[in-house]
Image (cartoon, rainbow, N blue to C red; front, side, top):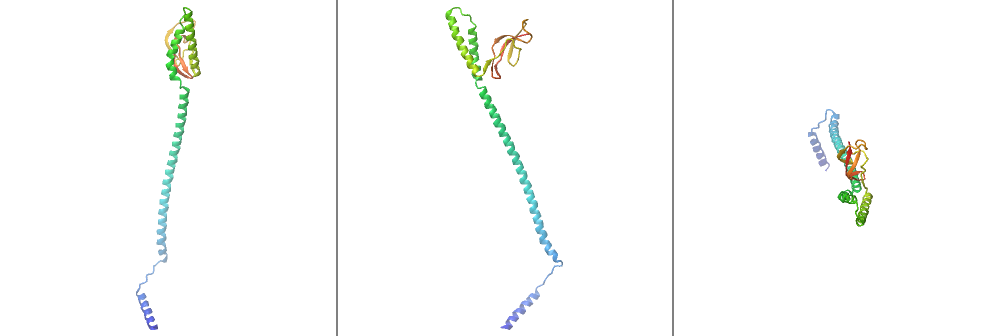
Length: 198
């Protein structure tokens, strides 16, 4: 049995002798190739990672800019909306006043009539009371008549329909008011129609 084992060992040795052993010329070259492949792979990954990082950073910067613009737009929208609401509240009665001005003009014309008897006097007294109540209601809403006679002509407040020469007035002064003008707070609803001294 020992002989059989020896024969197997000899055969294995012969088989091993048949194998050609190749030794590298430079042992360092074996180590360099895999290391350089690993290094180049690592460099490629690092380059890709840098590119990804730069791309993501650019996208983040774009998103931040868009966010800032959106916030600014929203703030401007909110500010505009607030101003529009304040303006709407401030001038809410303008349309009603514009509708009422012809009626007020008629009241003023009626009050210019000279009463002929007591009945007409009492009727005019009632008209005057109604007119005064209307004026008070308008004043509560900030609607006031525009001062005209004796004031310098202002094209923002007055509409000149005639130019006259009056020695008692200076040049460019309103001499007579033909139709009363009104303003709502700081906005002119209707300019005064006036005669202006030349």
